[in-house]
Image (cartoon, rainbow, N blue to C red; front, side):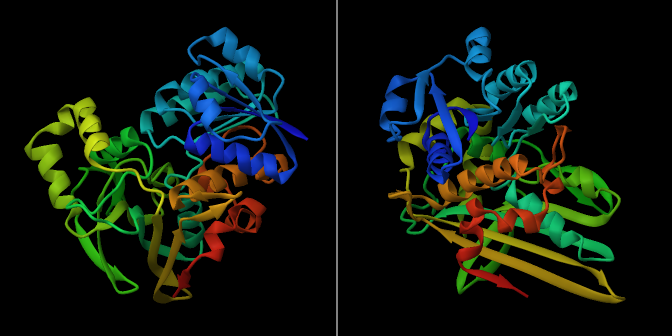
Length: 366
C-alpha cells in the first residue's frame, strides 16, 4: 500500500481521495483547514481525516513526513508552501495549478529533489491532459506547422445570458480571463491578450466559440519552441459568452477588481454538476512529404462515479492526477526533479485504470 497525503478536501481533493482509496492500492490521509469541509466530503471511515493549517509549516511537514507523496488540492497561492515541505520531507509532489507564476516557483523548488523524488505541477485537464495529448499529436509530424489546443467545461443545459455556470474554481476562472496568455506565432514566443483571438466552430451540430485564455498551455510552448510555427490554447464557450465577459472585465474594468468580480460570479452564476468537457486538438504539418491535418475531439459528460454523481470537470481533473500518481509508482515517469506534462507518455496515460473517462466517452479522430 502506498501512503499518500492530500491537502485540501474540497470537491476535487475528495474525489482524488475516493478514486485512490477505492483502487485498494493506496492508504490515504487527507487534511483541510475546515472541519466542516472534511465532514461533508463523504469520505470512507478508513480514510484518515485531519484539520491542518497549511501556513503552519512545522505542522505541515509533520503531517506529510511518513508519506511517499503529497497532493495539493488547494488554491494555487499555498502550493509553494506544500512543495517546500515535500522537498524537506524527501517525498514527491503533485498539484492541479494553472497559475504560471506558481508553476515557475515549483520548478525552482524541484531543484532540491533527491533521486526518486519528483515535482509534477499542472496535473489536471488543462494544463494537464491537454498537454500530454497535444505533444503526442505533435510527434506524428515530420514538420509541425500549427498546433491548436481547445478545451472547455460547459453547462450541459445553459439558461443565462452568459451561457455559463460555475463548474470549478472561480479564482482560477478569473485568472484565465485576466492573465497574459502564452503562445508561439511565426516560430517565436509571444504573450497574447486574454479574451482576444475569437473564433467560432461547430461540433456535433452545436455552435461554439473559443478565445485566448491563460494557463491552459502549461509548459508546452517551452518544449515546442523552435519546432512549431504556431501554437495556441483557447477556452471553448457557447457563442456570445466572450462578448459579455469582455464587457465585464475590460469595459467595466472589473478585471482590475478581481475580488469584486469573484463575488459577482459566485452570487449570480449557479454551480452545476451537469456539465460537459470538450477537448479539441488540431495539428497540421508535413507527414511523409504531404501537408496533412490530424484532429482529435473528445467529450466527457457528467455521470455516476464511486456511487455519486460527479461533474465532467470533476471526473477529468481527479482522474488525470490519479493517473499520473499511478504512473509515478509504476516508474513510468522520469525519476527525479521537475516533470512537465508533455514528458508523460500518452499511451501509458491512456492505458492506466484511472484514465477511462477520457476514452470511454464520445471521441472522434480524423
